[in-house]
Image 1 (cartoon, rainbow, N blue to C red):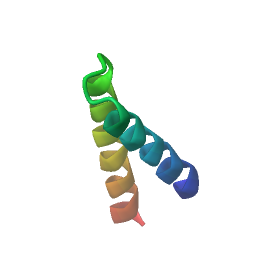
Image 2: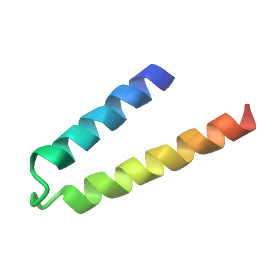
Image 3: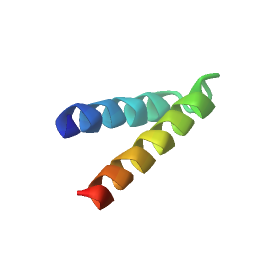
Length: 46
């Protein structure tokens, strides 16, 4: 699961870097922040 999350986060970062003016940039950023928060919580719980 961690590998899949890392791949997803890399894809989101790549999409933001490719076109920072795209309308979905804010959504992608929020999703990335949410995913990082979840991952941090999972790491702390372990």
